[in-house]
Image (cartoon, rainbow, N blue to C red; front, top):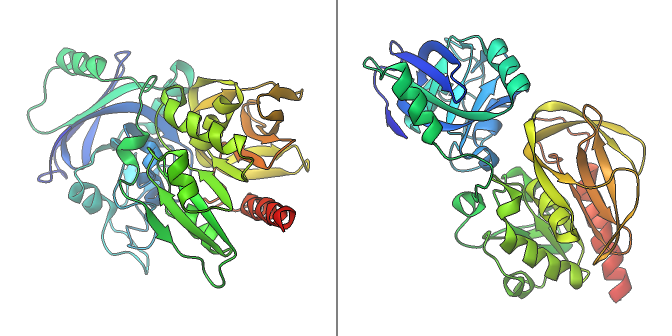
Length: 383
């Protein structure tokens, strides 16, 4: 990706999909060129959390909401230390941000971090194209001297695909760090960072959990060196079929019957650890308005999602696995995609969506309480 922070307001920009569809607009953010997988997000709010979610690494995010940037950018809401999206696509960017917490405009922040974007295109038409054709490689090119269409298309088709991409280690912490419990400490959790969002350890800390966040390359020895009451596997980018290391580590955790909780990528890792396959969705789930049913209670939750892969597990039967019986605990009501797993014979469960979603909704926050209950029960058994 090559970028410049000058002249963005007036520079022409072109978005080129790998199937040859082209959209023309104006530069938004940095001027230059960038490549990634084109995906769309249906959230009406929470754009700052979306941009800083490490799971969007190497993806060009198309916002279906037409007006973006209205509340500017603040210093409280980022989910990580940087913007991770490869590119950003909006229809009508805010001309003047207005919010009491705003410190700068979204356009300014994108330029500052070198994120190439495009504005002024028909994002409804682009979204419909991706729904019909599927997520695909894309390039955004901006500047006053652009290559011809054929050259841009050739560059897009040379970019790496998301299928087969091993990206977790690229976004994860390199060094272990600790998020202390808020109030009295009740438990210690080892969290394997595959692209963790800042709100996740915070949600645990609110419940009296001291969270030791470990690199994606953490071994079972690293995990148990912190003497955890529970183990957590985070969200993250890339193809779960490449995550052989985390799968092997999770199998070791399962063999010790330590309380275990996984979110998003962590759900896919659990699926693989149990012997299920994973597959790439046509265009994925990304937004904050997805209906999911918790099959253990029958309750339907409105949930936040960001995933392009899913677990291939049977919806209507209990499966025998090397670690006991397992079943699908949550399912998306839009398309019947697996949204959660849990073991019946030991304390382990996961969900494909995001119960920690800082921008909301908060329907699934109870899952952190469920994790606490598992650790409490395990502690009572040891006592």
